[in-house]
Image (cartoon, rainbow, N blue to C red; front, side):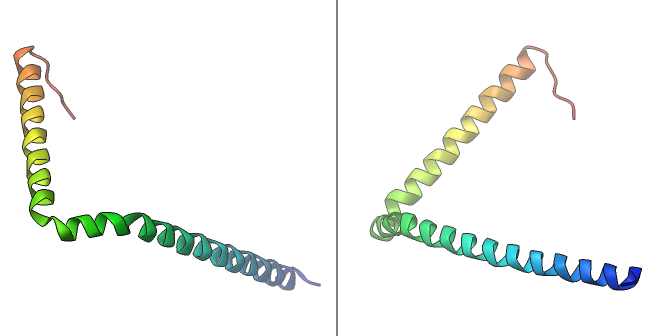
Length: 85
């Protein structure tokens, strides 16, 4: 067997290994998606039944996040520290 044939054989083996890994990864991803769907079903029902409550919670969380960010920003600038990237 010459060098070219050896390299071709080696590449074909690597391709087969990669195909096997892709099949395994695909099965793992599919299993993960199934688990995620089962976990999300109860939440989706609550969101459908109570859209006003869910949007109120989202808006409240956003306002609280902005307030915390503002407080952190004013505290940092009052103490004289500056963040530089």
